[in-house]
Image (cartoon, rainbow, N blue to C red; front, side, top):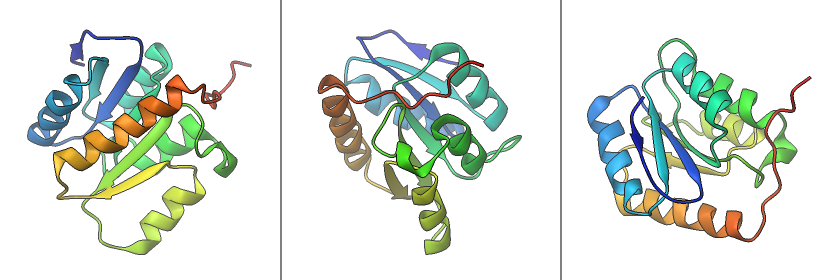
Amino acid sequence: MAEQAGGKYKMLVVDDDEDILNTMRLALADLGQTVLTARDGLEAVDVAERENPDIVVLDLMLPRRGGFQILNHLKGKPEMKGKRPLMCMVTGNEGMLHRKLAERLGVDAYLRKPFAMGTLVDIVKEFLAALQAGVEDARPKAK
């Protein structure tokens, strides 16, 4: 797990492609927040549970645990869309079926690869503005 020290909010970026992961990390590091990374699904869940990120950028197709499982674990219910952690799913999949399922699981934004890094940065800026405005917490509660 790589970490870029930063400001008030934590972002977790998850992708199994090292080049894409590093490109997203570098682009988001310019926003002045803490950027954490993970390369597979199990690592993503571990980092998310330990660090409680405010924003998650999540690849759909991951080894060891898929993006939908992670999304469901972190958001829990469709009514959690727009609540913390705010989540952007990225995927190379062209089908609308995956997008619809992601939306049902509460994803806040959905990007198809390849995408302009500026588009991701703009989405994350919108997420940061929502956090500053006081977005409610949707993280699973400890039992």
